[in-house]
Length: 297
Image (cartoon, rainbow, N blue to C red; front, side, top):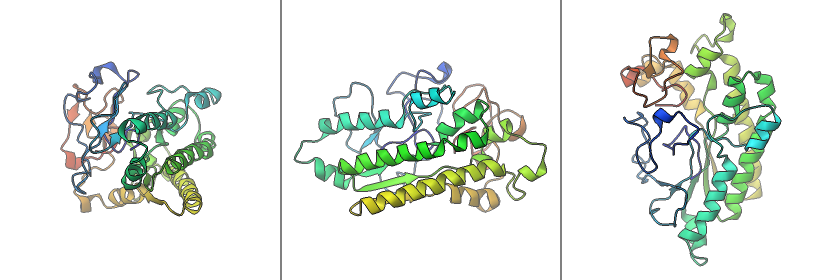
């Protein structure tokens, strides 16, 4: 399993705020981050997080290579484009290398094919953080749009590597509606009414950007499926179901879909100093919100 921070709990990194960090193999947060894993619903056990120096043991239900804030692109790409990666240095390529190092530790040459054939690989959601960094550092949406082909190519290359290693079933999620995220709604607030979707209150241009990323990802997955007809590549649509909630929140028991679950009485209940699990924050009932700032509850 290879994923960043948005869909599953992930390991903390030293570059994150120290007040949120805990030693490895302990809960990252003092209190639950209000994220509900789907794995119990579909009877899949939670995979173990991979840590440095692993000996290959302790992975009866799979392995999680996710890193909070991970990007698809590596540091040199961002350096070349004048972007500082502030959250983590571990890119998708690094996670893939971890997997390649772990594979011979958990399987022999004779049973490796069976393990790869029978495993489910979740690749993503990844790519969102490749856009978060430059957008929050002053790059325009058009400038960041030029990053999309490189991001998609890197994701596609990782999927291709996994298939060549023997993976046969892969789930690849797309991006979320970026224009509905409280952080973006605060940082990119506009005095122009036409910049907002009148039905949802989301920022139209950012959602259009997320849709563009998803279209390019789908095109890449189509190419990979034709190249590897023996594999099953499944696109997981996070965008469409999320927009259903934003368009009809009451239907899903959500009273304030654009509000962060915790923070302050600021617009969208969001304060940038607070992220999920921080001590000093105001909480609202979970049915009133969807986000702890950047990630889904």
